[in-house]
Image 1 (cartoon, rainbow, N blue to C red):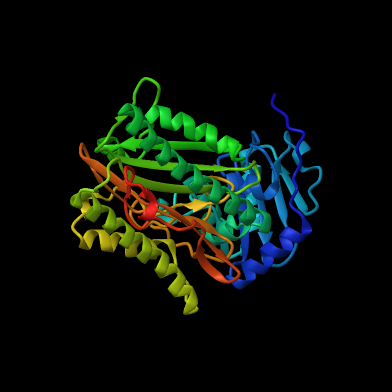
Image 2 (cartoon, rainbow, N blue to C red; image 1 turned 90 degrees about the horizontal axis):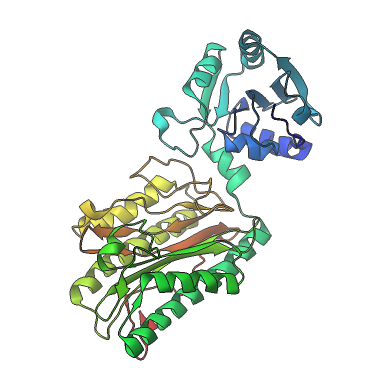
Amino acid sequence: MAVTEQTVALTAETVARIQEELLARGLDGWLLYDFRGQNPVAGTLLGLPALTRRYFVLVPARGTPVALTHRIEQQPWTTWTGDKRVYSSWREMEAELASICGGMGRLAMEYTPGDAVPVVDRVPAGVVEMVRAAGAEPEGSGDLISFFTARWSAEGEASHRRASAAVRETAHAAFERIAAAVRAEGRTSEWEIRQWIQGELLRRGLQVGGDTIVAVNANAANAHYAPSADHHAEIRAGDLVLIDLWGKENDDAIYADQTWMAFVGDTIPERLEQMFGVLVEAREAACAAVIDRFAAGNAVSGFEVDDVARGIIEARGFGANVIHRTGHSIDRELHGSGPNIDNLETRDTRTLIPGVGFSIEPGIYLPGDVGFRSEVNMFIGSNGPEVTTERPQRGLYALLRDDPFLG
């Protein structure tokens, strides 16, 4: 029989902050549910690992939180300071849940109609049905999740900026390494450069999650391509090279995630230059949309920013070559729990709030031919949104020029 010595860690201070946010949003409570770690939001807020039995925690907008837990699994709840109810049978559980939720009205849950935001949609449909049967109405907790799990601390922001500098410098050094190898030996390979980048990220202090995609030509048209020792391409003069790399300092730090592109030559073909120019235009428009909306005092959601970037790509004739969202949340996870910049893969209506960070990385992919992506990171601080990636790329780098990084 599995047991855990870890106990619940929902503090009075966190409860007060949750209740303040619930009242501001006109919600009657936040109902947290989990079973075997299906809902990491509940585990994060409560400080609990995956448990073997179902549990519910209701934090009402006013009043005392209530936990509904199984009798066989009481050790994790010994430090619980709110009201507690226990059950053994499913009949007891449903009766107690109805008693807790009855008359509560609007309850935030990790649920989105139509699975619109999968990272939020963690509660099974059957549990949603039970809550509705009790007389309450579940509503998506997406904005609450952003506020309580995705915002960066001051040290988190500082760690991201250090990682951002290390990632950028590593990417540029990798391009210099490619140029030197091609000049000296006529070639290098995706795998050799990937291995070097992994070691360089570690050397620069990014001890957690550091990795990279190094892809040339048609391989760059595979957005999640990963070169390996057994499957990789050589890099030679005349090749288009994409380097997407990321990492962070430690478990509590914030990731940096960037993509840079170059051409192994001294003159960039017009076709490649024009296609990359479309991406830069889309990227810059998306960043400007966030900045301008905040400057005007207006809210902006992830789906709206995605529409801006994709609209430009579609207008330039490459709409059919867009295969992924414009960006993703970044926090302690590379793909974080906050709003994504997405109205393609999902319908992310969550608001971009102060304290959250995310990538802006539009892409154009022509299978069997070439692929392009340009990625920067943004953070919404106390002074508004800003691009945290220093000196974003404006054009493809021509690696065999004397001054390749003017782009």
